[in-house]
Length: 350
Image 1 (cartoon, rainbow, N blue to C red):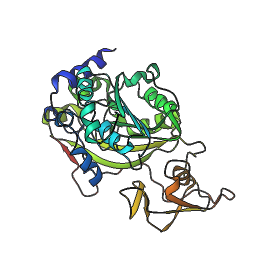
Image 2: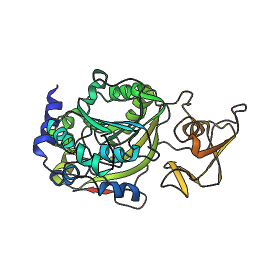
Image 3: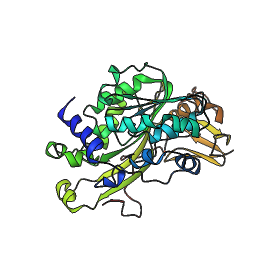
């Protein structure tokens, strides 16, 4: 275990006692949870809630029966949300390296098993460092979904975390996670600051480095689902970080063979059936793919595969083949994968 890992364990296990002790909100959930998630959160034990630190919502739709892995599960909040959604036939495993956080998560397994009406627990927590997922007793190619909430920025070898996650997923599986990103590479001197690191700022990846790491790991076409600029309003921290801009971003990465580096046009379309629980009227695959129920939508080949070769296949109708290529598909993104605030001042870090 490195000095940096020890600092993170001390910060999250000893210095922080509740999420009120955070010095910024870079590691706090920003967007409003959907109604079905709110209902589950109301059932989660208070101690789990107040000791949880995250920067987004890492619970996608359509989880029934899935096997889920949470990287850096902390006090277990997202694991317990996922536990409720995967049901008795699903399974959730949380990995964390901080003893104090694991103790909170493990203490409340029976409480949530009863709350959710299960006969037996479907969640467990194991001690481990996400930098070394390949050393844990986790079967390769066995997970339908990997989630993580503002933790990968704390890892020292982010390339390896992404490579290991890819290996753990089943074909058609997904990594869905929130984290903090920067608009430029962060100087080493800032990365050595234990407060900036613990507050999820100085460990943030430059967004273009992340895209290259993800693609290098096998996640060919990363998709943004949510993004928000973060403004650091603590004067002392702002002085340290200078002009660096930070963003809280939720990505979804699919393990799918045959995805192309660019969005290509094969004349294909899809039609959403309206059958995903909680999304009767429309479903959003990402921040620029909106599928109203019953409406035919033209899509690129990659988007077609993200729906046809995953757990979403039964919820769409598919039209077209791969016989004719019509060139690049227009309208699938620009240079920066997430936008500046469109009318806003960002989300404040106090």
